[in-house]
Length: 381
Image 1 (cartoon, rainbow, N blue to C red):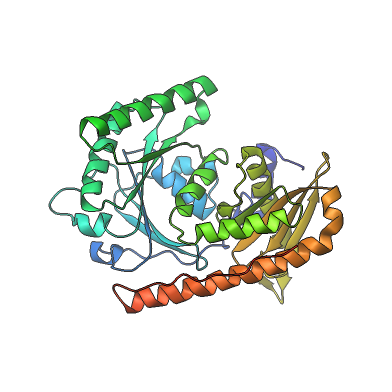
Image 2: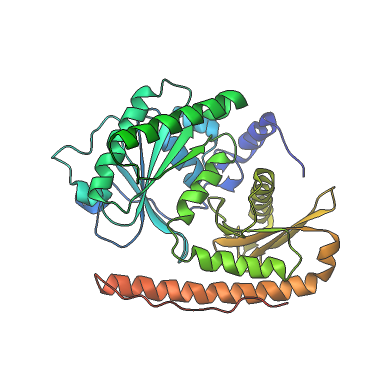
């Protein structure tokens, strides 16, 4: 696949105007941002999972949110001002990708009596604590320990994720040593406090590569109750279609909400992300319907042949979801079978969508709904 340098990107930016940022047009977004809200509105009692971004000042929390969910280029984040209030945003693409992300200022202690800890940490969700790996992280690990203990006391079901961030400037040896040291300190502190049952997940991340997208993919997947069903459908699909790897992507953010049970190779994930960029770029140029920009629609599909006899195959699942597959070129000779199995897969996904929609409606109508398990049929050989 072709690539271009940073100088080329600056050339294109100047040619197409300030609206050109990376691979997506800036007007192709999830929806309007929430206006400034008071604390009671930010922590409204809805049923959406929450992702809480916490950490010390200048650790990179806002940069992560802007790069992943607002398509901001990493270089543009250098001009972001430090967050001085809670910033809330609703992410609502489909029945699967629905959550609220909250960016907390690093200089404020939200466990003070003036804040309602139940509203902040209650409900279903995850706490993502960001640590700057290029700074002295002793204070950060202490704040992490205090935050985890207090949040767990309020909500024992809250998931805890640790992003060891800004590792792009570190060598591979220092990355490994930093992760090992932070992991050891954090878990030792929990053991000393008698809270060894609390599980922390650690990720090495950077906004300058795809590691931040993969880490956020793991976080979001844990908030999707239908994840086992999606993985099972993908396993059935690839086993009956001669496909080596398949990802179900959220097109806007390039996080994958599900994949099959085979291990994820970072290079394969990066190739799939770049394919989505290519499809969006081409659609942004040619995909206009009666003057209306349609970067991605139900007819979107793409085939890219690599020089190592590998094929990348993209098919639209819904407006915001795409299935990206990796397979050998000789297996693609059975494209008719692959397309038929994909239609079966998409229909099964729609059934899961319907179940999820009904569940959300029940949760909105009742404070303690009773949810039943539904079975869907996957593709066949």
